[in-house]
Length: 273
Image 1 (cartoon, rainbow, N blue to C red):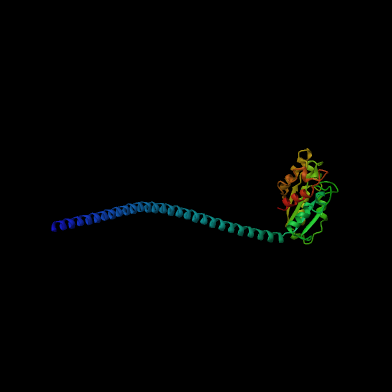
Image 2: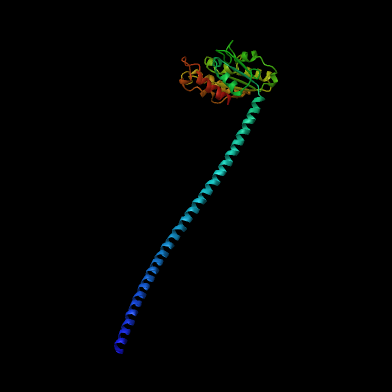
């Protein structure tokens, strides 16, 4: 009947509508899920962006620190280059200075031996025998009879005396028996030595050093040392601290008087410098 057909049609329409409604609701739910996912992704992205921003700031800070360190290194390199340049200039000046200097060097038995201080000094300065005249004798000292530093200076074979720039004399141990006034003013003493040197080598600077051994074990050694130090009143220069170059028995031979090879090296190096 028509009524039945109408009812069936209406039911079919309702069923179709329910189906479409269900599908629509599913789509809405799917959309809502996607929206939720997108919102979550957005929060995550914002967090990532924030973290990346912080990382970028950290990296920029590290880059700034590195740049600062590079600038500091550049400054240090420049400073070192300037120092190296200054050192090279000083070495050149020293080399030129040594090339234009001539020495007379006088000593006692400390100058014996292959590597004695007087021979080490010549090696350090790289001077030949004409420009580095050596005169020494075992037992020599100032105002010390036949074994006298003045005699050694007088006997030195020197060409062109006016070109001698330095006279170096080092001793000390052999003067332990003389009193201070004798060392200074006696025959062949420091005063006479300096006056002779000035008269015969007018362009020379006179250097006097006391090489100390057993300074604390012999009351006369400090007395002799003090006399040597007073050479300045006559116009000589005292080689400061030469008396402390041999402070240890480890630098002496078995006689505990003369330097061993290491002691010779210490003396030669210090006196040269």
